[in-house]
Length: 436
Ligand code: C5P
Image (cartoon, rainbow, N blue to C red; front, side, top):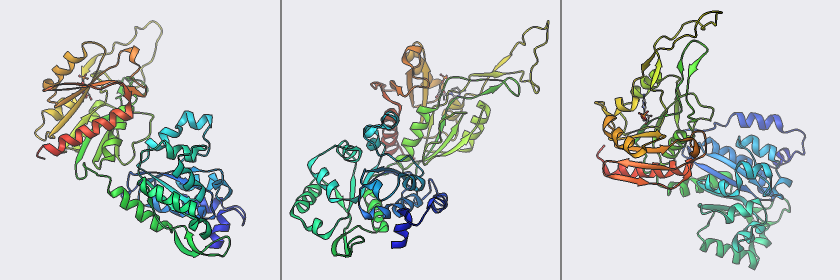
């Protein structure tokens, strides 16, 4: 173990190849006990920090996504390069990093986690947490968070037994923070024996599993078919008709539903954003391909059709690239109607018990949305105004109304991730009350 520690600390030369090999063997998302769970791992500055490399590996093996934050002191024990290679994610170290703040920011680091783990939790970090100090990225994230928290203390036995640490520990436990370890044994750096040795990675993993298990998965066992993104309708082999949909809202909803435990089958048109975590995605181009893929996924408990499907496609698609010839007129594009995928699902024999459609409108939002309920056989229409002033298409915010047969719910302007979370919660509540 000591040799392993020295290797990871870089004392035996270049550890990069080993790290790369280790990282390659870690699946990015699996069907394990922590599948789709997001863990923010705060690594404190203690010799036990080297164990975090194994901890990251163990968490990822179980399907968790691990996003690491290193304190300045932690960087003395493990390098961001090693941690980042194993986590397969960016490593966050600075409170005032222009790039990080722009990218994610300390509030989002906490918001985008299901659980925060502090390992090793040094005496200093425990003291900061107990007293609400926030003078670096790690302590600021901890203070700005309302997420469940697990800490794995690691320190010298004298520090662990000190009256100040005892007081801090009692405060943290009173605040609802869960501790794992420390164990009793020989200290790596001094050879002293006593309490203060960080819990082993597998003990920490077991505590993580237990804590997250308490997090309900109300959609476990439910299957939800979804569409997202635009469609591309070919004119010839190189040209197509498209629209401005980015897929951001649909993909965020897919991720939020998966987070609640649903099995999400997402049929996505061409987008440039990554597949949502924990979701199986079928990539298609045209409306007809999208319809065929959706049909394959029926029956399902719910359908959420967010894609901006082209209403029309060219009737006279050319097998060869259309040529511009001197003296000839521009080609006339003949259009025919595309299949309406939502209406097909809404009126299908295999109709899911909950069918949700979207309505992107630039005028008469509510009238159009209400009409769509019947025309498309939907239970809810999520209506959003996509007129230019709102910047919804491609942007990160959305203001929607949920139109149902019993009325209209108006939601304030919020991020697409927030719309997704709220809609997923509403879908979850609806699926608990219907017989499926
Ligand atoms: O009629 P409109 O395009 O406004 O309807 C929008 C809703 O219908 C969205 O939920 C969209 O995904 C769905 N739709 C569809 N197939 C089409 C057109 C729209 O599934 N061909």
